[in-house]
Amino acid sequence: MMASVQWAWSLDGWIILVGAFAAVSAALLGNFLVLRRMSMLGDAITHAVLPGIATAFFITQSRDSLTMFIGAVVVGILTAFFTEWIRNAGNVDEGASMGVVFTSLFALGLVLLVQTADNVDLDPYCVLYGAIELAPLDTMDFFGNEIPRAAVILGAVTLINILFVILFFKELRLTSFDPALATTMGYSAKLMHYALMVLVSVTAVASFESVGSILVVAMFVVPPATAYMLTDRLGIMILLSAIIAAASAISGHAMAITVPTWLGFGSTTTAGMIAVATGIIFLLAATFSPTHGVVVKAVRRQVLSMTILCDDIVAFLFRAEEIDHRTPTAEELQENLLATNRALKIALMLLRRSGELQAGTTSLHLTDTGRRRGQRLVRSHRLWEQYLVDRAGRETDRIHDQAERFEHFTDRELREQLAEQTDGPTEDPHGRPIPDEH
Image (cartoon, rainbow, N blue to C red; front, side, top):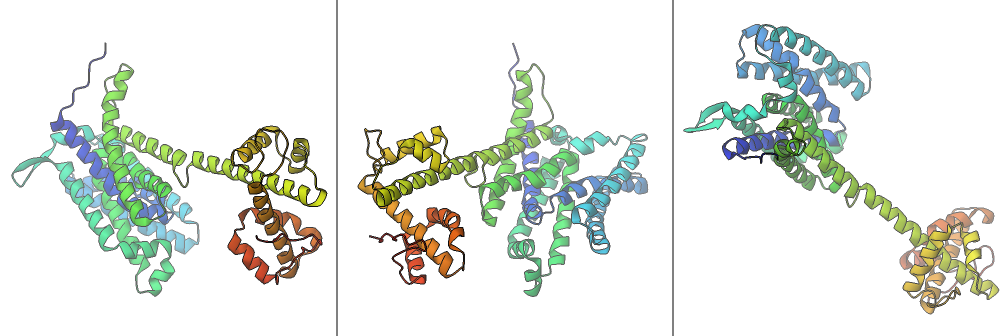
């Protein structure tokens, strides 16, 4: 029988708080990286700062956090500068310039870090995966209270990022969506770019010791990308990304200490499970988002397809009554509308339920409601044909298919405009009568 997991809030609470600070601080800036199509730049900076950490140790022979922090931030800023310089000087794609800079610096950093680790306890894996579980043990005096140093540093970084986003929201929005317009309005797009890159570097480096570079990369991209799928408003997107990041930190730590016990293991790294948690949230958003979700889009396509098929059935039956004064069979409908037998049965059932086809019979007779719908569709179709001939100069033998597509999305107001533009015709270009609106 597996032992139950015991929570110690003096440890777990601080771990969650440190993870939340790291996630939220990265997500706030990540919104603008995603909007600028620069998601890889966060990845580049978080990897490229490794030579700064190693170089700082070589110069000072000390593992002092402030020294390494400064060295890493300097290299992070240089990464953004070199990326921009290569892109402009070489006239290459931004992704290619980022790839050149970050892979070169990352490789150099790993070499230097491994060489350093031979003589001193600098663990390369700690830089990649972090040691958030140990964060509560490294404390500092904060106004008379012993607070984990990582919580103080990341809390300060989070506050700085919040203030930056709030104070420069208008400038960030303008330079993200239209840098040229921002420049003409007196806002320096380049200055905002480098200010953002400085804070991205600071955030990445501040998070290294606690959560490692892998989680920072995830938080720069995944919460903003998830929020982007849920809303089209920037302010709400930023707020949602912060909420998603914090929720990922909480659920990630809970998963790290509970999920492995289901499989008979002790626990796993919190930083890794936070990344897993935010990935799960992204998958849920990608699947069920009301605007961009895969399932919702599939349902909407099916609903639209069925609506169009119902339109085609009603219009076909109306034309048959109008021209031949007869009722087509289901086989004729299927042959002419190129519908599958299953789709046709569903469409006929829906039309009977909506009262547009006579219920309780297999015959295909339109009710008054169905006849009015068919009249509107046929009127829309023939007005479009007349408009395409009169205003677009199309040949009469090439207008049916276009009018067939347009008729499904034509409301009464548009029909009135079409009639006005074509001088209120009573017949279409083929000589068929255009039904009256009433």
